[in-house]
Image 1: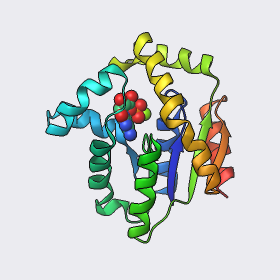
Image 2: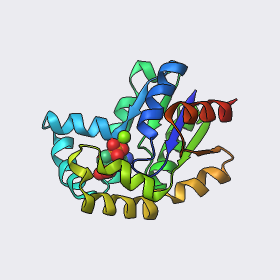
Image 3: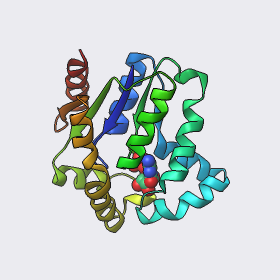
Length: 182
Ligand code: C5P
Ligand code: MG
């Protein structure tokens, strides 16, 4: 199973991706977590990514593609994966399609978790990440609408999109996702 989780920051992508990964027995690939590890280890990628993340900007495609490509080469990805946080731009989505086709693999489904913006602001306000301060959150939401939301249409056209109302308790959202994948 190869899945992509889409949704605004705070929509619950990461939470659901983690639950689904255990259930489907495939790795959960959070590109945000991968970047945070790179930053902790002060790697060249981490040092480059740091300023973008702090400002709520997107890390350039070239860096993100490098991070993802390396992770996809790990043997645990051969049977599938759940992508959380990638792709975030149309060019990342096109790159992913090309790469998987070259590997004779393909995306099975794209799950878009839809949550009301007010609810998202409430959720992010209680998270403890350094890029969750109100000003950065506002900017990340703007960036999401500009750069990432167009992916909904992109995957709709590819016939892969599953639309999930994420405005419900965690377990209900998981159940909705699993039903949509049947
Ligand atoms: O996915 P997550 O919200 O954990 O990502 C945290 C930050 O990492 C994003 O706000 C962004 O700055 C950066 N990021 C990115 N491109 C990605 C994934 C994460 O720029 N594909
Ligand atoms: Mg996350």
